[in-house]
Image (tube, rainbow, N blue to C red; front, side, top):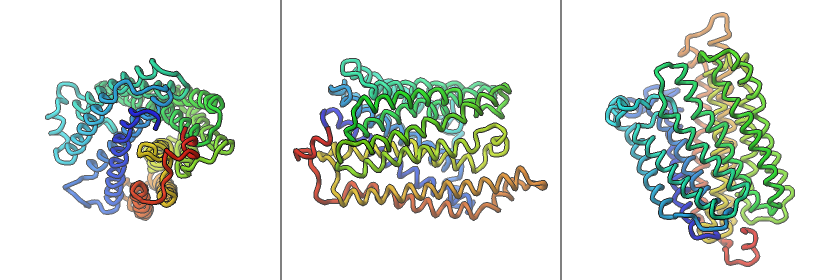
Length: 467
């Protein structure tokens, strides 16, 4: 850690990992409800568990992005953060608002929650991923604006690099596109049209900029490759991500009543969307192969390489499998979509946040890297989580293929619930893989508490490696 104000990243990372654990627990509850329909009913119905699971995903990733920005931008800008106190105040506001929202989902009927929180004044609730009550949405905007002010002032008064500028543009885009969550037109086609301007343009647009900046930052630190080389790669990757991602929004417009031309635009540009993710994979491996030093934090290097591979598989390959309109006609809304979503979110965004935490948390605690014992434990967690996510994706893919055949292609199509009974075996296998994933994240958390011979920042030989 070069600047004292970088310490504000630590509570953001701790909150991110805690919320990630909560997301996994609710994912396991949902997985069991797929095969034991009355599990925890009526205390936690499926629709509530699903809301909590997906909202925790969004919130913990936002905490991770914010923590990464508060660490990365001061170091790239070569100056202290504009206002560490503002960053800490926003942390507590965001954490309390997020916790209150989750508790509201769990203990208040959703219709009553909407009535209590002013949804009759400005109707924003009831849409997938954007179920948050109006006060929570307003709180997210306030937190985002305060963060952007803080980071923008830091960059404006400091050194400008490709990494901190790309990170800043990504975060500004995140905040701007979230504003469409307040627009809820009565026409269902228009509603879905603009709803994707939040959801798609986050995960297949501006979040890719944030991901690219975080990965580039860590690779510079752990490989010692010239900044100019990494920044050229970064510019090419984000250009391809924006070109394909923005127009690729059209693959969500196939069947909602939008004009027919979106089937062509959506298919063509969605087919190109794997390219930037493939470039990230090549980028990560190329930089590590060209490294000019062996960084003592082996676990962070493993997470960085894993991010490239899994992002390409989840967002690229599994996204391409069902993105062309003639294929999507059959696969839309099936378990194929769930398979893609799980691996894409884990591979692209969960793993890049874990990469950043793995690299920065030892530094925030006065070390260059965790002890060898702790790193072995962390690398075990990497393999358990990653392999189990591969199996979750494969089981959901198999369930989706069988579901599509039984429900949509067969000469005697089955009703939805009858088809679900036929694929229940895959849901059970998915649940087992989910339990392995839980063991992985518990190992990841435990690795930060393992004692051993630590590499400290004061050690001359290794301090240079953290520079």
